Image (cartoon, rainbow, N blue to C red; front, side):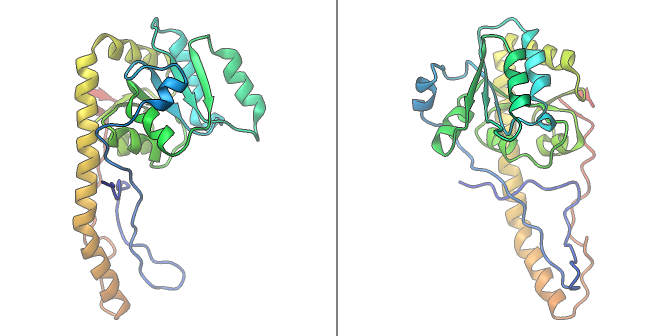
Length: 246
């Protein structure tokens, strides 16, 4: 099953330089209830017993915040970092130098290996300080994983009320969230279920609206006036998740 979209704050037609209207069809993710464990075995991991980040290792992704926060947390659950950056090896080395022995740098993992790691993590953490709609966050949500994000607008818009956010770039707040999730597996399961439900909701909403948008596009091409926000949903000014204001 494929999730077709997560909407931006406003979803509307755009009018390029040619003057013709066009429909925005955003990307999404698969909805998965299970995945294999061969990749976990290869790296000595156990299902639901590790934290996960996946992405390019560049400063904007904020992995340094995650590593600093993780060092403050007493746990045997490893922190798994998937990704690399051959164009900025100095930053990658800084991350490795700041990490303790519990942090595992796996390099790139693709295809089914990625899905196995994503679907079996305890918590997925997205510490990005600059982000759009993150396809990896959507993937974790589609797999029913609890997600924790840096409290920037783009991340908050993606998770809605189905995840947790730490104060923007706040290492201590992130560490506190990780401790709380370790102490409450039931809460983690509830958040994971909510995340998957949101992924399904986004899919259904976008599929229902797509024919109407494309119809608007066709009518506009025939010279009929269509207001660009005629069918745009009201903006979601998300201020936090699970009672945490950001």
